Length: 318
Ligand code: ADP
Ligand code: MG
Image (cartoon, rainbow, N blue to C red; front, side, top):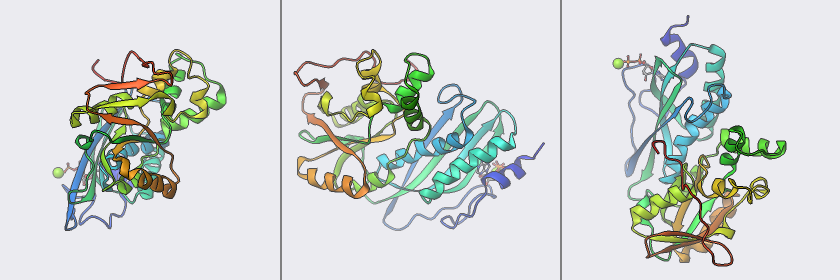
């Protein structure tokens, strides 16, 4: 049996040149640059709720950090540091090796340093707190949407949810569609560069973790506005396109969770600027609707009829 300290040293201790003090003391020490605000967020992945216990540990390491990076992206923050609280049913060194490799691969890509954490025995539970920086006053909030703003989303929506309904046996996907969508579910790509680029351009932003309608709904609630969304404008992958007419198809698109794309609003005057950002990042950005004064969210089909879906998003306690 490996000791907790050896385990931390072997799997979770790396050089942290961006911190005053990293792993190994009672706490880490961080220096936030002048003129910057500290941005902090925590996201937890629980076995059985957010993933299956037999999920590939490399992808779990990736995803545990990715969902946190996505929150930094939504705030337009530059992620800098993370802590990892890990509860493990057993010390499985092969599992830990792959988990930490997946976590550090994504951390390195974003220059994020793991500066501490906690390791305990218990049901498998992965909790990361992420810290980032944003120039004073430039963070994007949910509360900034203005009437007349364009509503935008990055990437395509619904692929992760489509993979999940297939895994749950609620829909049957062709093998190549499942392969494409499973990647979206297990390896989300947080839109950190997009978030940064939207400083001073977007009025509001959120990351889509619980489905477009639920998360856009948070922007609308916080901003005291409504929205009119064009169903036909929504960015659908070629995979989802094939299942869109099936009972759960529209649900995946409008209310599927785990996309980790950004939804943001920006004034019409910034349309070309947003398109320039899309081109410079090589990222699909799609204008899907408009912010309205009437405080409700309407999704409209091309013929003017209203598109309804029963549940608008994933709520753990519903
Ligand atoms: P304490 O008992 O003082 O809380 P711990 O023994 O829990 O300290 O942790 C020792 C050091 O290892 C601390 O710097 C802590 O932040 C770090 N640490 C513990 N678990 C992890 C982990 N899973 N990943 C990264 N650092 C960790
Ligand atoms: Mg201590």
